[in-house]
Length: 483
Image 1 (cartoon, rainbow, N blue to C red):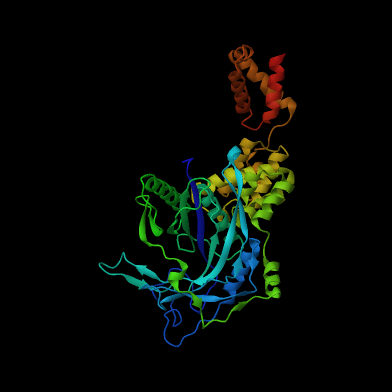
Image 2 (spheres, helix red, strand yellow):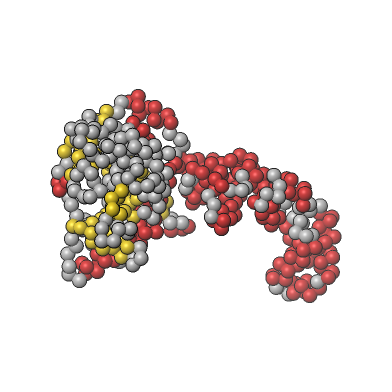
């Protein structure tokens, strides 16, 4: 593989968060019966005219500002001509020569630990367009059905430069983009419902050589499928070239059942679509005042919040990245820190990323549905910080909060008598009793067996019913054993 370089560019279709379609008033709600949300405009009946949805333009501007792109003061809608049963007009209204968003970039971490690195991907453009309908094959023996509910659904197509060099980079980019469009509120990101789907343009070349012939893998609706499809396609192309066969530009589909790609059609170029400006739509003109209004509505962006977590709270780049994976996680973490205090930012990060995340995953819950609120978790961490309870006891308190046995950590600690023993005299008494009762462990430790020390610590903690301060137990034991 080292003698080959992988080149990847992604085209992502993000369904915009509008209640109606991009050129009509029909609903965009998911799950309706077939063809119940397709009005005269969507059906392309004679005499109808498209009217642009202003909210869709707002979404495009938000995205352009979020990635540091140029929002075009003037953009033009074009007709992309092709014939397919689920495209009623015989063309799709899209943007071609003058898109609404030009340029921009997205930075994101790839990998973790010592091998982690920061990657930056440049964007070519993002343009507004309408979705086509959907052809249904499974429920019709020997026939296809057509559902036009999606026809006219507003999309923002986001196109990258061919800047990615592995499936890992492509997946990291897609995850970051997915988080961003959800964060700024322009797309719900529901991949199962088709709200966010990727096309991957993949080619291989010898290092330093011109780009190879690309093949486009269409409609990948999960990050796992994106990685599997790219990995298979890369190996397939390498094998083809090494066996003396040329790669033909094509559109391919990924079959998750076999893990293979298969050719759908030879790839069209732009001239095959015979683009021309749509005569029914005026150019889209976006003034500085419009951009300023949308700019003022933008929340703090993930990259900005990441930097703040690193600089103000002392978190690692990995922790900051994990905690800004979604607006919900970031908000929960910040609310936890607000209660526990900035000095406990790292313990808060650990609890949110490890203990809470594991329990949410086990129960199949999103963080917004957590039975333990951020305020409750912050209160628990504050009691660890002031040595009211130990980490081990904190896990019991967390479980009690999860099951609703108390409204706060303080209430549970008081009710169950879990307050940590920090009185040196009381702990020393327990240590003396354990040393007297376990002469074998004492002899083993003095003979150099460190495991014997851990056994003695365990006996002291057992005698204290888990409530003795672990550090004090350790210190007193070592002091006594050294004497």
